[in-house]
Amino acid sequence: MESKNLGSLYTETFRKYWDLDLFSDYEGECLKFSDVAQSIHTLKTIFEKAGLQPGEKVAIYGRNSTNWAKVFLGTLAYGAVAVPVLPDFKADNVYHIVEHSEAKFLFAQKSLYNDIDHTKLKGIEGCIAIDDFSILECQKEELKALANEGKSLMVGEHVKKEDFFFAEKNPDELQILSYTSGSVGFSKGVMIPERSVYSNIVFAQENMPLRAKDRIVSLLPMAHVFGLAFEFLFPITMGCHTTFLTKTPSPKVLLKAFGEIKPHLIFFVPLILEKIYKKQLLPTLSKPIMKALLAIPGVNSILHKKIKDKLIDSFGGNFVEVIIGGAALSAEVETLLRKIKFPFTVGYGMTECGPLISYAPWNEIRKASAGKLVDRMEMRIESDDPHRIVGEIQVKGANVMLGYYKNDEANRNTFTADGWLKTGDLGVTDDDKFIYIKGRSKNMLLGSSGQNIYPEELEARLNNLPYIQECVVIQRNAKLTALVYPDFEAMKADGIDANSLESIMEQNRQSYNKQVASYEQLSKIEIVSEEFEKTPKRNIKRFLYT
Image: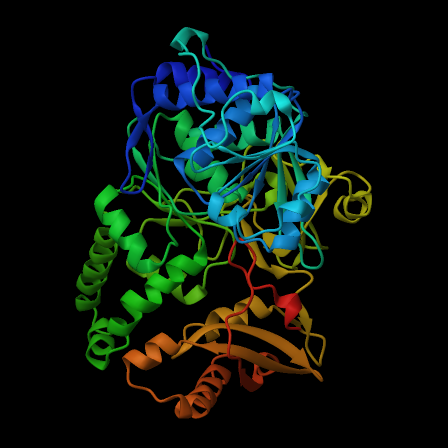
């Protein structure tokens, strides 16, 4: 029987794949669907005995792990609302999320919990350790009675396959309350309904290449909807085995994990792929002999195949495609990947759409696009000519959020009078509904003669110049300045002294200015001593620097 909602989908999935492998922590033990079902069943019992009502909130504060996954699924199975809290959030933001969401229970990783002031966690009736499910703090006698202090709560009656089930919700009922990192002040709570989660998963089932027993590496934070939806919730429904990285996804750690696990589908944010490109490929491609060989017809196709094969092998050699989302991909990186026919695609979305807005498989994606509008969604461009003149991308449909939790002002500013979600992104489209993103409307700069300048495009060029790790382009007195954090690691490896930085950056400025229009040229490069502060999607919080 075809499932009609998220609850029935997961009930059918667990019963169907009961004896297959489901989750592993990297270099840890493997759990089957039946093992995780037992934990979910026990959590449901704990919630019931502790007096939690369906629809009430459960906050989850920790890094990716099998236990994090159990808590999230247990919350959904019970009919409560999951409130993922990003482990990288500052303490004040954590206190705000817990109180603002009205969470009744908090599951926290001990190392993170020990670094915050517990007295500022308002409204919590019980706090449980994700690590071992022991009670950290408790105001409810019902919860205390379930286990002795310091002992795990995860001891419960065995559940039979035919008795295991997930609670079912109506399409517009709240499923996930996801707090995004706002541009100013505290994070906003995005109310993601059942229909949005279900629609995203069904689209992935119908369009993304996974089958039962395939392997996935979970490296993006599950407390953010991109990783949550596509490295976690979607693969479960296909009977896949997900390995949670549990470590910071540096290129070295990632490539080791990929080599061992050999995943069938890979999800990246652009920053990760661009770092691999810069560290692994660019040094070889920049050598004079390589540049000369790549200019020779026939020889270049052979070299392109060798580069492609090496890159595929470094990612485990077993995947169908790499899906990139969360931000724009550098044009230079995209151009190279297309030249070597690397199987990658770029999707587009936002937390407010749970997250998908557009996607196309790697063999259908169009150059410089962010994919094609997904099923059950509509789009319009606020422009006199949406095919040629850039305008704001606006959407409506099954994936769109209910709104921001307890934030009427933000809702008024985010939805149009006729009910369309204003994405804040600028772009154009074509006849086939492929989307071409030019930048964020709030980031756009105005040139001295009225030209629109999209700093993200300029930064993508700069980031591929020597010894630039990351940068932000700002406008001062009608002139453009780039704030640059140097790649000190690469400088050290090449024996470059820090005293040479200013002259290197001046050379970079001159080289960059030769490649761009006059109104996009830089008047100055300023060196900053610390990495830029970033959002959970690893986008720079540019409002702090403009």
